[in-house]
Image 1 (cartoon, rainbow, N blue to C red):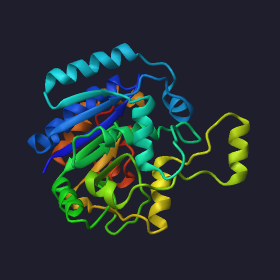
Image 2 (cartoon, rainbow, N blue to C red):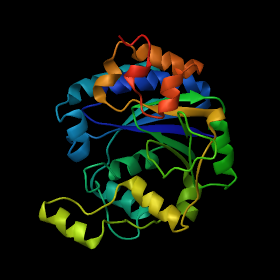
Image 3 (cartoon, one colour):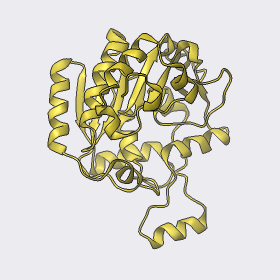
Image 4 (cartoon, rainbow, N blue to C red):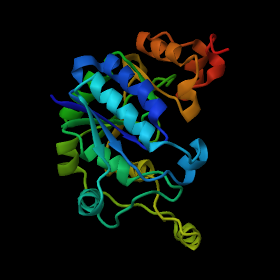
Length: 282
């Protein structure tokens, strides 16, 4: 079964791409058929710009992408669709409305493009700041999705307790694209409540919830089935900040995820990387 791993990139992401994409290639090896990187050349806004800073180099990102394409033929770079092409993708996903970004600036259209531009049929979309431990979750995800036992699947989060229930997150999410299109889409383009919509429009901001919040709304309305796999099959670690990808300890962090020897304090702390729990960080 063909498996696509996809992600999104913007002008802020050169260092993170150089960290994660080679790691993904080592972790998944020949089991994945492509890594699709969807490049959005528009400047980040809202929450993302506030978290990482609005300054970035699109030229440096393109340089990093060229390096990664030379590293492995399966690395494919696609520009973010625009115009009629993007409108058609959004039209397949939503019953009404064509949301580009949510009310705090997080991408919606770009995330959907990452799913849609994959060759599939199994598509795993991950943020470009996600590291993986793989002990069988990839095969389990393909099996569960292929047999129609779930519509969306996520690998466990680092430190995830057995049986824990989490809301849908777009940080790392897998689907069977043909089944998703045939049995789930289109979904509602969920908005804020009317009072918050008035507030956002007053300030020139969109009314939409984040894509992961829309998917969680669909789940709670019994519109789709979401499951998180057990941590025994592997897990994800989120290196949230742009500057963290350049920390001297990061090669150790990557190696620990690939070997499965993560410091106990980091494991207990959960999915978000915390430099304090890595002994050689100083």
